[in-house]
Image 1 (tube, protein in one colour):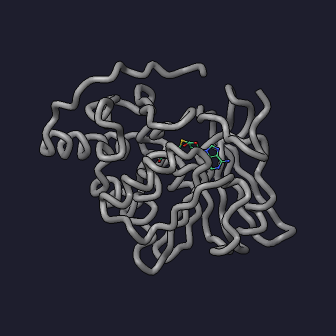
Image 2 (cartoon, rainbow, N blue to C red):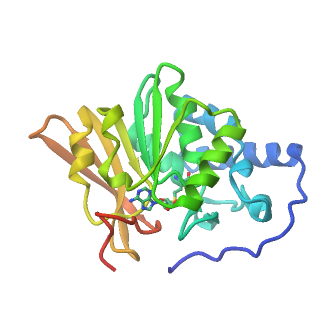
Length: 240
Ligand code: SAH
């Protein structure tokens, strides 16, 4: 994988208060950079403790980076699984325009951090479903969510590119690994006027793409710049 320098593991030495200060600074930085804008997401990012979603030996790096370009994803249990960089969440969620009451589907639970943020935004009138293909990452993400009290998020183990029919249709779908095209199963599970976002391309070069489903026959796509995510596994795995 090109791109990231992951710092070495070390025992966590930071206190809860230090993490809180760092979390506030991170939110200020993302606002200043114009990546984080909506009130509901600002509140969610101030509330959800990102450090609790990192493994103990990488916890102190949870808010690393004084600008979005020096942020890093953190390794978590599972093949190629990570907690994405902090700016990735507002990058995806602001473009998706997640609202209170939305039914939200995430592909790639990873640490569970993205699912927790989405749950804060959609609130108790909404619903979050998240699917993870890797058993180790699934156990880690589900454990984090439960420990932090996010017990009404539906967590599923399987190929998320096939969606989760039982809870369909969804208002918003976020694919957090790189795919070669939008999975048509997910398109079918998206409501009219729904939005879906994914990094798209090869395992080494991707564009972030937003799809708006005006109706079954009227689709709009927007290219939002280049990004680097781990490749999606399963049916829609990207070309290498
Ligand atoms: N959203 C996560 C980060 C995702 S990293 C977070 O907030 O921490 C990408 C994740 O996608 C990895 O955990 C990887 O195992 C998972 N993944 C890859 N292919 C998948 C697929 N087809 N279905 C579900 N999850 C998949």
